[in-house]
Amino acid sequence: MTPYVLVVEDEDALATLLHYNLDKEGYRVGVAGDGEEALIMANERGPDLVILDWMLPKVSGIEVCRRLRGRAETRNVPIIMLTARGEETDRIRGLDTGADDYVVKPFSMVELTARVRAVLRRIRPGLADDRITVGDIIIDRVAHRVKRSGKEIHLGPTEFRLLDYLMQHPGRVFSREQLLDAVWGSDVYVEARTVDVHIGRLRKELNGTTDADPIRTVRSAGYSLDMDAA
Image 1: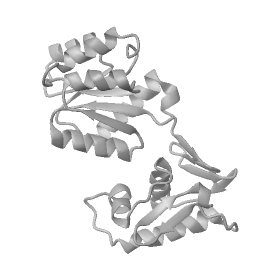
Image 2 (image 1 turned 90 degrees about the horizontal axis):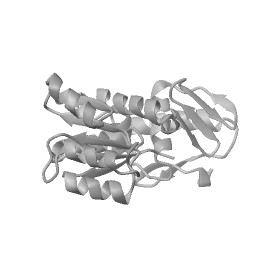
Image 3 (image 1 turned 135 degrees about the vertical axis):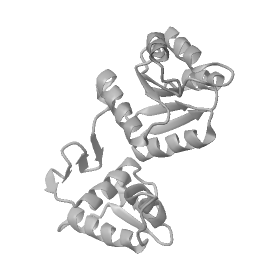
Image 4 (image 1 turned 45 degrees about the horizontal axis):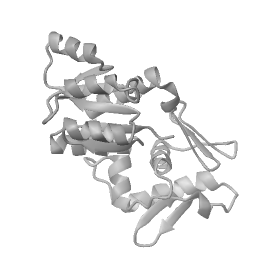
């Protein structure tokens, strides 16, 4: 099952950025804007990991951490604390309260997502599997390998990232612009039609001699990985 990450952050811009990047990594994401809302959301739907800001309205991050550790249902949920407080005494206090990791602002999203994977691997290894299976397609992110019906498929790096992203969201239709942003990055200028070229290459390698095409073209909308259409 895809891990559910609860982001607790009162800065709207940062919360949006965290949601976007975690969703891009394939996680299900919930966002709480204050400590009180975080506790309610954690109680309603147990998260697999919490990214928790220290300075929060209503209930502080430290208190949220303490209460989560005090509940049987959330006692073992991994918690990564975010804070601008970088002093050693603050880090120790956060860890002593029950946090599993501690990230000081400002931080890079690449580092944070790497820490999320590391914490899940260490504490909940079953949730950190770097292999995704959709239908008869298996993608192994660590080994950088793809198999379909047991047969090895050789993809270029862009086609690999494209398939990886589509497999994280099976059945969902993405426009060319959305795929460009997710696979190539928002800071790189690439023509939208480039997506068509790489989709064509991906289809050629995935399908081989079979007519069972898992990539569905939706006219005027974009592309989707749809095993029911294969």
